[in-house]
Image (cartoon, rainbow, N blue to C red; front, side, top):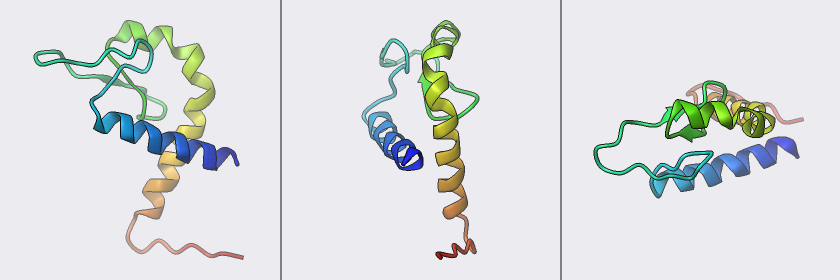
Length: 88
């Protein structure tokens, strides 16, 4: 159930990213001429407009970060050619 929630959240974040990157803390959308976003170093999913926003969101994002990191790992693993999944 937690994995499903994390994957669902990951799909939502991918949708949001497709609509334009927004900061994970202040929801600011980058405009032309802005520097790139700073990804969370734990999950690489959530993006921040500045190091300040990243530092200030550490407590709020921390609870979901591990779940998203696991979901990203599983998604990458499943998309690797030759991966075999045994269902019992």
